[in-house]
Length: 309
Figure 1 (cartoon, rainbow, N blue to C red):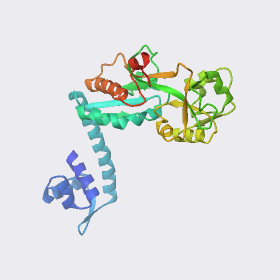
Figure 2 (cartoon, rainbow, N blue to C red):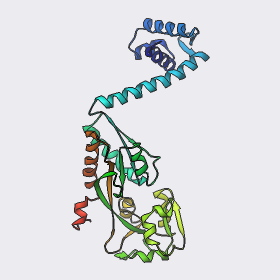
Figure 3 (cartoon, rainbow, N blue to C red):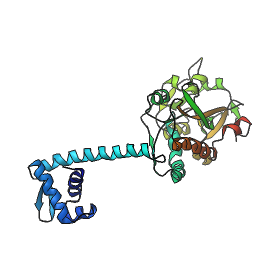
Figure 4 (cartoon, rainbow, N blue to C red):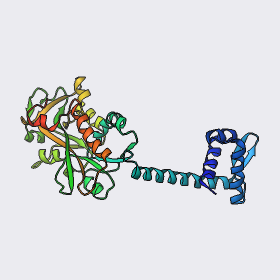
């Protein structure tokens, strides 16, 4: 039995017809019938019932089909892995980010990136939790981590862009007309945040270092957080790009946090000991360029020189 026999079983089962299957496999119907006889002889049993022009799987055929699908998938994955090792412009970039909402830029960025590297797949590890960069990078489960920290000496960090955290309030909130608010003012209002432990939110630990707010609402979805703020149930602190559509429509108002602002720098982290293929290096460089051109983001140099708008 050969791979071609398994491909034939899968195609005949999918099409239910020898003629259609032969066309899809670029074989004559006679050649396909011969392959079917060969595999049935190998298993010493009938795999398909010929019912007029329809091919129906027997119980034995179902078992062979399940095995064929698994084996063919393994073969395809093995070919892809070998291709990655032999083709310098073909491979995979495995990615995760500490902030789930950051993935909104991925689709637009990939369109640009894949015009240069069409044979590179970008795989997003959505199951990676907050602060997963250390574990995932050190275990070589990912190639690039988009992170706001740059403290691990085992990683190389490439600055990508900066964003600003702002207080988000309803238009009739007492802060709405303020130019900025101070950190110690947050303790007087309910706080709405993502559903993560307190200690994993640097903002929460900064605002409520000495005293907790009256209530803390922990919400999974950004949209739900913003709806609660609109309803006047509390205040939130989010990056400017997250709430841009709501601000433009007048549904919400943002206020600077301290006169100096709270700015966050994002980095692409990679293992120092791992040699990166050219397409991974290009991924990082192009991402930095792409994000610096988006409204609501800025490159590190621009903000450092006071050019953040």
